[in-house]
Image 1 (spheres, rainbow, N blue to C red):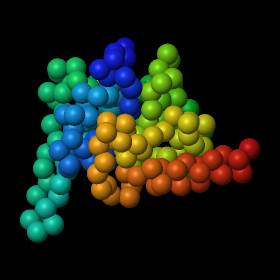
Image 2 (image 1 turned 180 degrees about the vertical axis):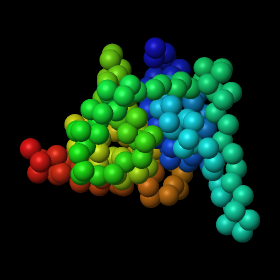
Image 3 (image 1 turned 180 degrees about the horizontal axis):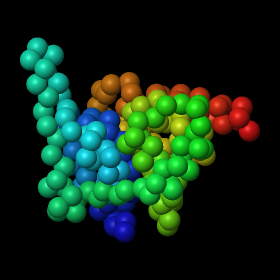
Image 4 (image 1 turned 30 degrees about the vertical axis):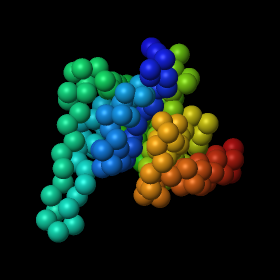
Amino acid sequence: MTTPSRPRCVLLDAGPVIGPHECGLWHQFIERFDVVLAETVYEQEALFHSTDDLTGFREPIDLVADVRQQRISVESATSIELSAVTRAIGGAVIVHDGERESLALLLHMHGQDECRFCAADGAALQAAAIIGLAERCVSLEELLMSMGIRRALEPKYGRRFAEEHLRRGQQIRLFRA
């Protein structure tokens, strides 16, 4: 699946879809990475970006063409896979449906060990660590840097934010063991 022009698979939560759209880097991003979205993220969560504070207008995100032209792929988790993630997380953190489905996909991807999960939500990163997937997580900042792009980003897209929430999730994992 991986080719020299697209060396790495990334499973994105809604935030890391929205961020590159906001800064005009989405097309470069999907040329560089094999992007996978959970069906819930695709259909319900990554729909708008760049809210205008004055008017409230939100720019729509249209991923349909990207899917049709196979620039990104959309996967869905089974109810059994979703239940397994819910049980594994327990009540330690609360994640949205798209994050839960993304984690279920990451946990059950066979032959895709190189795929990385990118989220801009602390609870999703903590949940990934709780279920033993901390080493499979990456920040949007790190992905952009691997493309040679350095941009000022919101803290939630940064490496430090990801590391802090992964550390918290690992502490919860150890405490529960």
